Length: 186
Length: 109
Image (cartoon, rainbow over all chains, first blue to last red; front, side, top):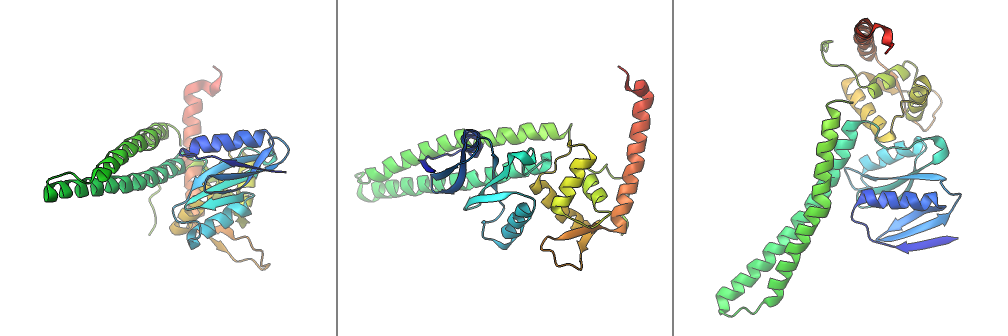
Protein backbone atom coordinates (compact mmCIF):
# COMPACT_ATOMS: atom_id res chain seq x y z
CA UNK A 1 0.00 0.00 0.00
CA UNK A 2 1.29 3.41 -0.94
CA UNK A 3 0.50 6.57 0.89
CA UNK A 4 1.10 9.96 -0.64
CA UNK A 5 1.49 13.03 1.55
CA UNK A 6 1.77 16.54 0.20
CA UNK A 7 3.69 18.70 2.58
CA UNK A 8 6.13 21.58 2.35
CA UNK A 9 9.12 21.67 4.65
CA UNK A 10 11.66 24.46 4.81
CA UNK A 11 13.74 23.14 7.61
CA UNK A 12 15.56 19.93 6.63
CA UNK A 13 16.14 18.99 10.26
CA UNK A 14 12.40 19.05 11.01
CA UNK A 15 11.72 17.27 7.74
CA UNK A 16 14.16 14.52 8.68
CA UNK A 17 12.56 14.14 12.10
CA UNK A 18 9.12 13.84 10.52
CA UNK A 19 10.28 11.24 7.97
CA UNK A 20 11.82 9.20 10.77
CA UNK A 21 8.64 9.44 12.82
CA UNK A 22 6.72 8.11 9.82
CA UNK A 23 9.25 5.27 9.44
CA UNK A 24 8.86 4.43 13.13
CA UNK A 25 5.12 4.06 12.49
CA UNK A 26 5.73 1.71 9.55
CA UNK A 27 5.57 4.22 6.69
CA UNK A 28 8.89 4.25 4.86
CA UNK A 29 9.65 7.06 2.44
CA UNK A 30 10.25 5.62 -1.03
CA UNK A 31 10.16 8.72 -3.22
CA UNK A 32 10.07 12.47 -3.05
CA UNK A 33 9.65 15.22 -5.57
CA UNK A 34 8.32 18.74 -5.20
CA UNK A 35 6.59 18.54 -1.85
CA UNK A 36 5.13 15.13 -2.63
CA UNK A 37 6.20 12.34 -0.30
CA UNK A 38 5.53 8.73 -1.24
CA UNK A 39 5.48 6.24 1.62
CA UNK A 40 5.36 2.47 1.55
CA UNK A 41 4.14 0.27 4.34
CA UNK A 42 6.93 -1.57 6.11
CA UNK A 43 7.59 -3.01 9.53
CA UNK A 44 7.62 -0.15 12.04
CA UNK A 45 11.14 1.16 12.56
CA UNK A 46 12.69 -0.83 9.73
CA UNK A 47 14.67 2.13 8.34
CA UNK A 48 16.57 5.16 9.58
CA UNK A 49 16.51 8.22 7.29
CA UNK A 50 19.01 11.02 6.82
CA UNK A 51 18.78 14.07 4.58
CA UNK A 52 22.05 15.31 3.11
CA UNK A 53 22.97 18.35 1.04
CA UNK A 54 25.70 17.70 -1.50
CA UNK A 55 28.30 20.16 -2.73
CA UNK A 56 27.21 19.70 -6.33
CA UNK A 57 24.00 18.87 -8.13
CA UNK A 58 23.11 15.19 -7.65
CA UNK A 59 23.85 14.44 -11.31
CA UNK A 60 27.35 15.93 -11.15
CA UNK A 61 30.04 13.23 -11.65
CA UNK A 62 31.53 14.02 -8.22
CA UNK A 63 28.15 13.51 -6.58
CA UNK A 64 27.66 10.26 -8.47
CA UNK A 65 30.95 8.91 -7.12
CA UNK A 66 29.93 9.93 -3.59
CA UNK A 67 26.45 8.38 -3.87
CA UNK A 68 27.94 5.18 -5.27
CA UNK A 69 30.27 5.08 -2.26
CA UNK A 70 27.29 5.46 0.07
CA UNK A 71 25.43 2.66 -1.71
CA UNK A 72 28.48 0.40 -1.42
CA UNK A 73 28.42 0.93 2.32
CA UNK A 74 24.83 -0.19 2.68
CA UNK A 75 23.04 3.15 2.29
CA UNK A 76 20.09 3.43 -0.09
CA UNK A 77 19.53 6.65 -2.01
CA UNK A 78 15.75 6.99 -1.80
CA UNK A 79 15.28 10.25 -3.69
CA UNK A 80 17.25 13.23 -4.96
CA UNK A 81 16.36 16.77 -5.94
CA UNK A 82 18.63 19.73 -6.66
CA UNK A 83 21.52 19.14 -4.26
CA UNK A 84 19.41 17.36 -1.65
CA UNK A 85 19.44 13.61 -1.14
CA UNK A 86 17.20 11.39 0.97
CA UNK A 87 19.12 8.44 2.34
CA UNK A 88 18.13 5.45 4.40
CA UNK A 89 19.67 2.44 6.03
CA UNK A 90 18.19 -0.60 7.75
CA UNK A 91 17.86 0.05 11.46
CA UNK A 92 19.09 -3.50 12.08
CA UNK A 93 22.51 -2.40 10.74
CA UNK A 94 22.91 -0.18 13.79
CA UNK A 95 22.96 3.60 14.16
CA UNK A 96 23.11 5.58 10.92
CA UNK A 97 24.80 8.94 10.53
CA UNK A 98 26.31 10.14 7.26
CA UNK A 99 28.78 12.32 9.16
CA UNK A 100 30.25 10.97 12.37
CA UNK A 101 32.87 13.66 13.04
CA UNK A 102 32.29 17.24 14.08
CA UNK A 103 34.25 18.78 11.19
CA UNK A 104 32.08 17.14 8.53
CA UNK A 105 28.95 18.12 10.43
CA UNK A 106 30.08 21.76 10.41
CA UNK A 107 30.76 21.48 6.68
CA UNK A 108 27.21 20.15 6.13
CA UNK A 109 25.74 23.08 8.11
CA UNK A 110 27.86 25.48 6.05
CA UNK A 111 26.45 24.01 2.83
CA UNK A 112 22.93 24.41 4.19
CA UNK A 113 23.74 28.00 5.18
CA UNK A 114 25.05 28.68 1.69
CA UNK A 115 21.91 27.18 0.17
CA UNK A 116 19.62 29.45 2.20
CA UNK A 117 21.89 32.45 1.65
CA UNK A 118 21.67 32.09 -2.11
CA UNK A 119 17.86 31.89 -1.87
CA UNK A 120 17.91 34.96 0.33
CA UNK A 121 20.09 36.75 -2.23
CA UNK A 122 17.47 36.06 -4.91
CA UNK A 123 14.75 37.51 -2.70
CA UNK A 124 16.92 40.57 -2.08
CA UNK A 125 17.29 41.10 -5.82
CA UNK A 126 13.51 40.87 -6.17
CA UNK A 127 13.11 43.52 -3.45
CA UNK A 128 15.54 45.88 -5.17
CA UNK A 129 14.05 45.43 -8.64
CA UNK A 130 10.55 46.15 -7.40
CA UNK A 131 11.51 49.25 -5.45
CA UNK A 132 13.70 50.59 -8.27
CA UNK A 133 10.85 50.19 -10.77
CA UNK A 134 8.46 51.86 -8.34
CA UNK A 135 10.74 54.84 -7.69
CA UNK A 136 11.71 55.24 -11.36
CA UNK A 137 8.04 55.34 -12.27
CA UNK A 138 7.36 57.83 -9.50
CA UNK A 139 10.09 60.16 -10.78
CA UNK A 140 9.14 59.77 -14.44
CA UNK A 141 5.40 60.32 -14.14
CA UNK A 142 5.06 62.08 -10.81
CA UNK A 143 2.17 59.83 -9.96
CA UNK A 144 2.97 56.50 -8.37
CA UNK A 145 1.37 54.19 -10.83
CA UNK A 146 3.23 51.09 -9.95
CA UNK A 147 1.62 50.14 -6.67
CA UNK A 148 2.00 46.52 -7.68
CA UNK A 149 5.77 46.90 -7.56
CA UNK A 150 5.58 48.67 -4.24
CA UNK A 151 3.46 45.88 -2.80
CA UNK A 152 5.75 43.19 -4.26
CA UNK A 153 8.75 44.99 -2.79
CA UNK A 154 7.18 45.03 0.66
CA UNK A 155 6.08 41.40 0.37
CA UNK A 156 9.54 40.25 -0.71
CA UNK A 157 11.09 42.20 2.16
CA UNK A 158 8.84 40.40 4.61
CA UNK A 159 9.62 37.03 3.03
CA UNK A 160 13.32 37.85 3.24
CA UNK A 161 13.12 38.75 6.93
CA UNK A 162 11.11 35.63 7.64
CA UNK A 163 13.65 33.48 5.78
CA UNK A 164 16.49 35.04 7.70
CA UNK A 165 14.85 34.40 11.07
CA UNK A 166 13.57 30.88 10.40
CA UNK A 167 16.28 29.47 8.13
CA UNK A 168 19.56 31.40 8.17
CA UNK A 169 19.69 32.32 11.85
CA UNK A 170 19.16 28.77 13.23
CA UNK A 171 21.88 27.31 11.00
CA UNK A 172 24.29 30.07 12.05
CA UNK A 173 23.57 29.26 15.69
CA UNK A 174 24.02 25.57 15.02
CA UNK A 175 27.44 26.20 13.43
CA UNK A 176 28.58 28.29 16.41
CA UNK A 177 27.40 25.68 18.88
CA UNK A 178 29.11 22.86 16.98
CA UNK A 179 32.35 24.82 16.66
CA UNK A 180 32.45 25.24 20.42
CA UNK A 181 32.00 21.49 20.75
CA UNK A 182 34.86 20.99 18.30
CA UNK A 183 37.30 22.77 20.59
CA UNK A 184 36.79 20.05 23.19
CA UNK A 185 35.88 16.93 21.25
CA UNK A 186 36.98 15.79 17.83
CA UNK B 1 58.86 15.90 1.60
CA UNK B 2 58.71 14.29 5.02
CA UNK B 3 56.05 15.73 7.28
CA UNK B 4 56.88 16.72 10.79
CA UNK B 5 55.85 14.32 13.50
CA UNK B 6 55.38 17.34 15.74
CA UNK B 7 51.94 18.05 14.34
CA UNK B 8 48.77 17.19 16.28
CA UNK B 9 47.29 13.80 16.88
CA UNK B 10 45.28 11.97 14.28
CA UNK B 11 41.52 11.97 14.64
CA UNK B 12 40.06 8.71 15.80
CA UNK B 13 38.46 8.20 12.40
CA UNK B 14 41.74 8.68 10.54
CA UNK B 15 43.60 6.45 13.00
CA UNK B 16 41.17 3.56 12.49
CA UNK B 17 41.04 4.04 8.71
CA UNK B 18 44.84 3.84 8.49
CA UNK B 19 44.94 0.85 10.81
CA UNK B 20 42.24 -0.97 8.84
CA UNK B 21 44.19 -0.43 5.62
CA UNK B 22 47.24 -2.43 6.69
CA UNK B 23 45.33 -4.94 4.60
CA UNK B 24 43.62 -3.84 1.37
CA UNK B 25 39.98 -3.04 2.06
CA UNK B 26 37.00 -1.19 0.58
CA UNK B 27 35.05 1.51 2.38
CA UNK B 28 32.45 -0.74 3.95
CA UNK B 29 35.18 -3.06 5.20
CA UNK B 30 36.90 -0.13 6.93
CA UNK B 31 33.64 0.79 8.70
CA UNK B 32 33.16 -2.79 9.87
CA UNK B 33 36.76 -3.13 11.09
CA UNK B 34 36.61 0.13 13.06
CA UNK B 35 33.33 -0.96 14.64
CA UNK B 36 34.71 -4.38 15.49
CA UNK B 37 37.94 -3.08 17.06
CA UNK B 38 36.15 -0.53 19.19
CA UNK B 39 33.34 -2.94 20.09
CA UNK B 40 30.79 -0.79 18.33
CA UNK B 41 31.89 2.51 19.84
CA UNK B 42 33.43 4.00 16.69
CA UNK B 43 30.81 4.16 13.97
CA UNK B 44 32.26 5.85 10.92
CA UNK B 45 29.67 7.74 8.93
CA UNK B 46 29.93 6.93 5.23
CA UNK B 47 30.21 10.64 4.40
CA UNK B 48 32.97 11.16 6.95
CA UNK B 49 34.79 8.10 5.64
CA UNK B 50 34.49 9.29 2.05
CA UNK B 51 35.97 12.68 2.90
CA UNK B 52 38.76 11.15 4.96
CA UNK B 53 39.71 8.64 2.24
CA UNK B 54 40.03 11.45 -0.30
CA UNK B 55 42.16 13.53 2.08
CA UNK B 56 44.40 10.55 2.86
CA UNK B 57 44.79 9.80 -0.86
CA UNK B 58 45.83 13.43 -1.41
CA UNK B 59 48.38 13.16 1.39
CA UNK B 60 49.61 9.90 -0.08
CA UNK B 61 49.08 8.12 3.25
CA UNK B 62 46.94 5.55 1.44
CA UNK B 63 46.62 4.54 -2.19
CA UNK B 64 44.14 2.78 -4.42
CA UNK B 65 44.70 -0.95 -4.45
CA UNK B 66 44.47 -2.82 -7.71
CA UNK B 67 43.08 -6.24 -6.98
CA UNK B 68 43.10 -9.17 -9.41
CA UNK B 69 39.42 -9.90 -9.10
CA UNK B 70 37.54 -7.06 -10.71
CA UNK B 71 35.26 -6.46 -7.76
CA UNK B 72 33.22 -3.31 -8.33
CA UNK B 73 34.11 -1.81 -4.98
CA UNK B 74 37.25 0.30 -4.82
CA UNK B 75 39.89 -0.96 -2.43
CA UNK B 76 42.61 1.00 -0.68
CA UNK B 77 45.83 0.17 1.14
CA UNK B 78 48.15 2.10 3.45
CA UNK B 79 51.49 3.45 2.15
CA UNK B 80 54.83 3.55 4.00
CA UNK B 81 54.23 7.23 4.68
CA UNK B 82 50.86 6.31 6.19
CA UNK B 83 52.45 3.61 8.35
CA UNK B 84 54.86 6.19 9.69
CA UNK B 85 51.92 8.38 10.77
CA UNK B 86 50.38 5.46 12.63
CA UNK B 87 53.67 4.71 14.38
CA UNK B 88 54.11 8.36 15.39
CA UNK B 89 50.57 8.33 16.69
CA UNK B 90 51.24 5.25 18.78
CA UNK B 91 54.10 7.10 20.48
CA UNK B 92 51.81 10.05 21.22
CA UNK B 93 49.13 7.73 22.55
CA UNK B 94 51.65 5.88 24.69
CA UNK B 95 52.75 9.17 26.20
CA UNK B 96 49.16 10.22 26.89
CA UNK B 97 48.38 6.88 28.45
CA UNK B 98 51.44 6.94 30.70
CA UNK B 99 50.85 10.50 31.85
CA UNK B 100 47.18 9.81 32.37
CA UNK B 101 47.85 6.71 34.44
CA UNK B 102 50.59 8.42 36.42
CA UNK B 103 48.37 11.29 37.49
CA UNK B 104 45.14 9.40 38.06
CA UNK B 105 46.91 6.48 39.68
CA UNK B 106 45.34 3.94 37.38
CA UNK B 107 41.93 5.50 37.27
CA UNK B 108 40.35 4.36 40.56
CA UNK B 109 38.21 7.33 41.53
